[in-house]
Image 1 (cartoon, rainbow, N blue to C red):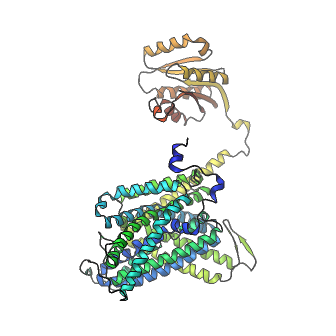
Image 2 (cartoon, rainbow, N blue to C red; image 1 turned 120 degrees about the horizontal axis):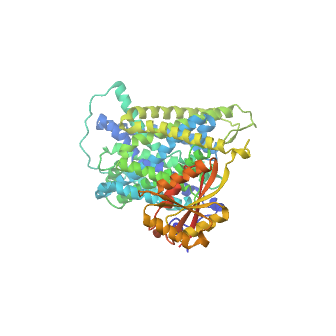
Image 3 (cartoon, helix red, strand yellow; image 1 turned 90 degrees about the vertical axis):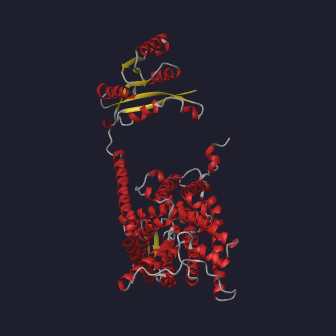
Length: 631
């Protein structure tokens, strides 16, 4: 009969099934590109929300800004395509930065990426809830609960395996793309008069400017709008992190998938921005730009609800980008000793279970703190993304410089890859350098303009994560040093004392089993009991004397105690025996323990044995063994 975990998460996969579980380009696009594609649901709106400060007339600048952002997307995608081809093992910004700029910059990229992936889940799910609320306003009051349930569902899907989740996630991704493309095509056809003019949606009266902004202030606001719209770039790096999730040839399939993702994302982004500008849409709290546009183009019919439902679905599933890359990045950091080693372990379904669960926990906390309001999380979101882009592209500039220093036919082996001389390395370096400068400027603008709105949290969190990395690394280095076998002698190892202590509250079959087990290992066995009443003392002495053939030659030690916490005197006695009678020697404590037939029955028994084990873990010369008695 299959276990409960196998029913919920599926049967275990053998190691050889890993290649079968990898993704083709169709599933890979759905799994890794849902985040950048879904960002079209709010990227244009993010630009317009800033521009509207200048008044409704300034919304005409949405399209020029969108074109600039689309050009930046092309730069970043080119850089990451080069990353994929030169680093087929995956790892993205972290690996590129480590290989070309050093450990400390790579840890900075790693910290920013971890924050980015947590925010990817929280922002995407919260934005999906908002899309649902646009179509079904009654859902707004329950947005936090809905968001948490969606996170739970996506977590479950990912724990079942990457290939299975990819098949499920493909439907909403492609349905969203088809729906929005239909809206754009119909809107463009009507805009050019072939089907008549698209009706304008009802929106507030023209928004007056908040004040006369000229010169630097005006330019600064435009930079803010550009930086806000750069949320369209979020998730682009995901494919470069997960190259090994693709079928062979991994790097070629991943690079082609990234190009396809960029084409789709830019088409949707520019199409939405064009229509939003020419339909004179104004962002509102209750109705998204995409919702207004769809209603104006197609009415509140089938296409409207198609777009709204699959907008919510792809926003929910955009969180899957974080689920694919957070655990994978965690495994890279764990491999290098900066995260707990168990982050490298794959579960029964060949996924990094620990990373998936950790991501679900952290993103759920953010959803609760920010009450599933994605707008309040966006300042945090884009900051880490731009930092990673800047470091990664700077790393590729360094790599292209190293490639240019080679002669034709010469090979360079780095820590993470192997490269050869390439024609055209100069223009590739120039493109990466341009992208690094632009994303670096956007990062600085975001930090300056969004600092008080929440970006300070990222500025504080990154150094704290870096300190965590250093602490973990230092711990593993110290452990390795203490476990080294070099120059080890017999004197360095503790002697084993010929004594076994058996803590017990009563004399029964379980304790008798422990006594017989201990007597086979040592001639010096002590049964230790804490006595809190005279009746208990008499009962123990009577039982001990009644079965001499079972208790001999063990010694019964009774310790009087006036209070109810029997652990304290028991631990004190064990400590005394260890330090005074057998200093610098290992003593053994054999703990008798009931093992009930079912899990619920375990809660019916005292947990003293578990608490005792916890207390004794701090004793350096005490070895605890369990002697189970199965009921």
